[in-house]
Amino acid sequence: MTGLIVLIVIIALLAWWLVSMYNGLVAMRTHVDEAWSQIDVQLQRRNDLIPNLLNTVKGYSKFESSTLEKVTQLRSSLMNLSADSDMQKVMKDSNELSNCLKSIFAVAEAYPDLKASTEYTNLMEELTNTENKIAYARQLYNSTVANYDQSLLQFPKNIVAKWFHFTKREYLKADEEAHKVPKVEF
Image 1 (cartoon, helix red, strand yellow):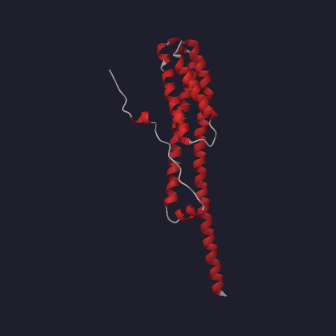
Image 2 (cartoon, helix red, strand yellow):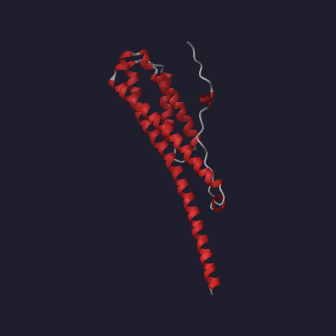
């Protein structure tokens, strides 16, 4: 009889262990999804600010129309991506949009009236804050993915992860342009 009780206790402990490991992995996977969602929220915020910025810039300059069109195209592309789109595609388009916005930011230098405009200044500040939030959200995502992926490799969680088909997540990678040394001329 005591052997049966010991067996039941061992089975109960193993079941508790399995459930706690599984729940821990689910929680970590949820944190990864939440971190991605935060990036998505900031990208949407930036996409909402861009039309206002473009209209302000258009009003002050005859800025190169191809740049404005490219920003509009990239913004539309990002807005049309579904929630389950490839993260690397979203980040590639987002990085390209950030690069286009940098050239629009430079317009203010050539147009002092634009630079002095309260609307332009406020929009620039909002976009700069949003870009900083996107950068932070990317760092948070990669940190969260690192913790999640690490737990998938640690024994004994790796066994539970295999049983329940938990898979590694991809890190967000820097754009190829970010690896090039900037050219500085004086």
